[in-house]
Amino acid sequence: MKHPLALCPGLLCDAQLWEHQARHLADIAEPYIGDFTSQDSIAAMARSVLAAMPARFALAGLSMGGYVAMEAMRQAPERIERLCLLDTSARPDTEQQTAFRRQMLEQVKLGRFKGVTQRMLPLFLHP
Image (cartoon, helix red, strand yellow):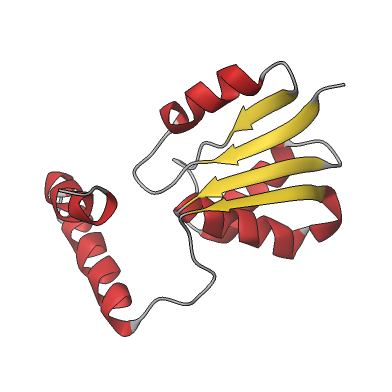
């Protein structure tokens, strides 16, 4: 029997993040990869995952996807059989992190998304 598995990508990531895992787990799992391009909050992202999944499922999240996974656990803990959190945090942002996020949001509002990617990439990758 294959187990339903929801995979939640991180910030600036899409389904490509999980394609390798989904392909290689297909013999034991029924993978679903979340699409968070149309939601405007972590709570809405979690609701979209819960709506797409059956009554019981396993859940994995990377970085921001981990925030989504933890929120799904908060909203419907009885539905999640297993949880995997990768490179994420359960702690609130520091003041510095909050300021950085707000600065990036302002750049996006001004139509400067390229600048956001360039400034965030060093946070995700080693030089």
